[in-house]
Image 1 (tube, rainbow, N blue to C red):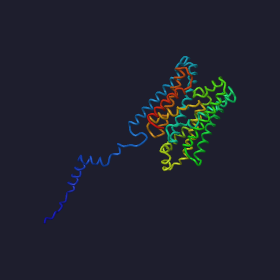
Image 2: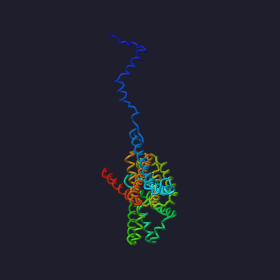
Image 3: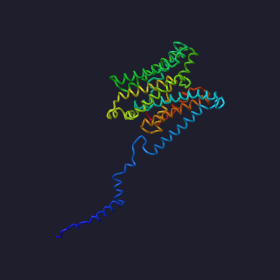
Image 4: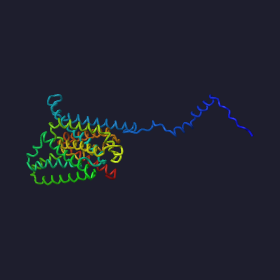
Length: 372
């Protein structure tokens, strides 16, 4: 019987054998298969360099278009000689229209993206709460009671804040009552908003049928979303309010990211869902009521800016969606205003083009998605 004895291996030989094993291709492939390098994987708002490049490219293109439309509106077909006092006077008047466009685009883009995140639906917009119908009812009611003088009675800073306060108060009371009651359900809130909007629309139609042709003609000019409806004395008040509410939504972007996960996930992550929902909807109602009181109702502008931001940004981060939505809104409004005012001589009723483009995009989105 033979006895096996292990021969001690010198330390130098053991080190050489370990080095050969580590340097062999088979061992290298096995190591890579078992523990892949985390450098090739990344999670975040922008997933990879291609995603970042696409986002920067779209933002750059929108910025160039926005600047181009801005310069075109300010300088195209200016009857005065370049550089004269009259030329700068006309440029200043057009600048006020551009400021109005920027405020309206900012309000609709921020409000719609935040609202769709809060209700977890990318189809419905804040217009479902009846802001447009309430604006129409207020304008029609004043003309119905006071005649032609009713239109001028709604012009002024105090009247602007009054219309804004009435619309915001109605929306705040609606969702605060419904979300805090026994039947706390956001779908019931949306359904009630639809019913209220339809009721106000029917009431406005009834009053409009009793007006004289001249009164109806003057009223109709006020019921379209028109940049010319805004007066320069409104802007010193509208701009700070819009910027303040925008800043609040911007700082709550992380909360909106959590709300986008749904009610169950938000509650599991420790978010006070009902409180945050009411705060977000209150800020949304302030933005939409101010934009509606400023230029009139624009039903498809918010949907158009939001859906384009979702498609081209392709991210969950609201701090990336908000600026892209604003640039889309500004570009659409500025381009529509330039075409209507300076090419077609049709005034500033941008609703004509916005509704056309928005309706087409809405149909394309529904047909591609196949469901609401």
